[in-house]
Image 1 (tube, rainbow, N blue to C red):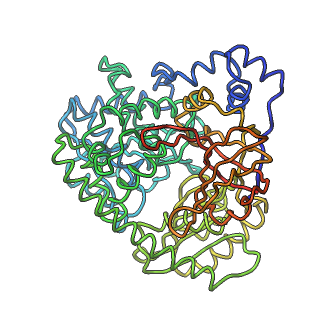
Image 2 (image 1 turned 90 degrees about the horizontal axis):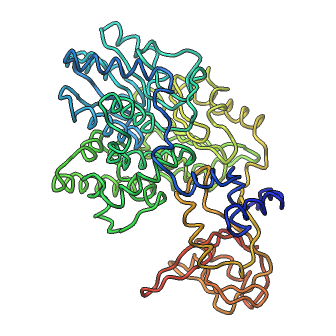
Image 3 (image 1 turned 90 degrees about the vertical axis):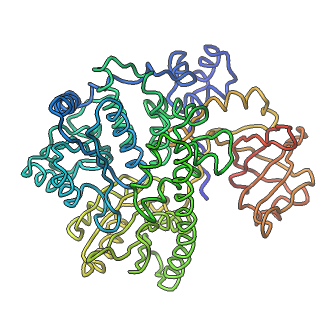
Length: 562
């Protein structure tokens, strides 16, 4: 791993903020790195308020979207709420449909089949709308590149409102309204909303016309927080506010479906990380293994007993997903090893029998192992479909744009994307992708970077510091858990391997005769010999709390040692 220490703010700025906030210079250091330089910004950061959310009508086309929905209700039209089959899409559909159904009955939902229809707005979905006399489709987490599909719908007399957060193409669909902060002509102040977040802005706008304030919409924030966590968007600005209050809902009064998931894992208080690893995979498993509509049913169910039944079914999907994930990952790793070519900048693998629902997870696993921009392909009907994952700093969406003439369709973000191509194009695309990446990537990006916020002395760790650092949460992109580095550490004679095959490292560390502090290093068991017998070493870590027999203590969560 490359250890990279972030630039330290000037001493003058650190001291000025420390005095203004009456906090330790280390806290000021961390705040300035996050762009917080004065009292008011710190107040917004530590005390998020719903009033910090922007006026939804600042978003391009919001007035048109609201007017068209109000017209549909006035004319008793049938409305279809359409969304992608992942967590962002299914939570967005659950949010929008349940809000509309509070006051209006003629609302249906539609999630495309991952295998028969693929990602985004499908022609089958439009046929469904026509067959059911639907005249307005609200598309969430998809649609901004669906030119052909929206045109087809228009010819059938069906209007579209698009709520998306993906980068648009060169042209926009001919929709009634396109709500997407990433539109070049959209001046909305915050650009990093997820699809469910854009949906929340639409219900915020609709609610304001019904006399509702944003406080009246708090019950929907468990869905918004789940989508923000699962889609790995920036937890800054509005996303931070939505995640902050959404976590409160999740931990105090979640909707029946989310409560049913939490009850199965018996965890009392969830963080954003817990949402990523506990709630999101189970919601995703429905679309991966069966159908995303199962997730919408779970998230919109009001009866807790029925929600428990749905959650049980989805738990079985998740168990099946984990088994397939492990099996396919092993096969993909073997394929890379058998076809290893020196100095390749990418990992591209293909098996026509791999389950399409887990290739995204497998791509993430391969990226973690080989740390290369990675594509995992499988057969999908007459075409090949792939999930793409990238390494820190490299824009895989731009790389795919450089191969666009080999592709049938693609879309996504900087670090994750999906695509389809004709089978005969696969060899050409594979080599083109390698060439584009090789010519554009900084070779340093092919080694994992461990980004360090600040140097620290173990003697500076205190309960007060821990209390303040906990208030930096919720953590995520743009506001990661603070990571520290300390030099000249020694184990106090406690170091040992723990866990299965002793793959984890447990120790008690001191520095310059400071009181010992416990440390745990997951998957660092192979470094035991580097710290045994009081050998001096440096470490990168975050601060964590360890609860044992009712006693809570601060411990170091080791990221790496050398």
